[in-house]
Picture 1: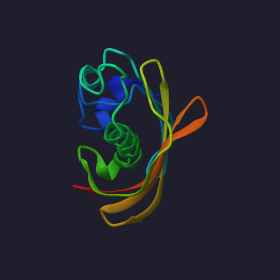
Picture 2: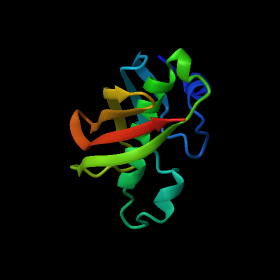
Picture 3: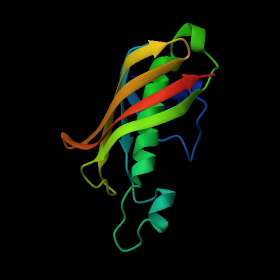
Picture 4: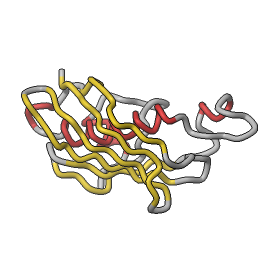
Length: 140
């Protein structure tokens, strides 16, 4: 299991934009499974939406991308690099994510060619799919 300090050694994201709290499973270059504990104190809930707080879908995609970045950037040859978004395909938002939810974030690298790759990403809440997508990245 990796905590915040270990995650920060792998990816460049920092608070308030580091959107994963821990990594529970890691196979470098292949997959990662992480957790984001969604609290009412998240800065976006002040405006999204004050009467019915919902985690923005793009931030869930970002949390999934960060989980995938831990997988790909944990390879020794990628140490100190950044994984950038190239594309988001087949994104589906199936369940609202609200304060008190725990997001289980899974990203499996399904394709790699040079610095470009694709991850199959799924975010779960209570065992139910909240968001799924294919995320294309470029390591640079």
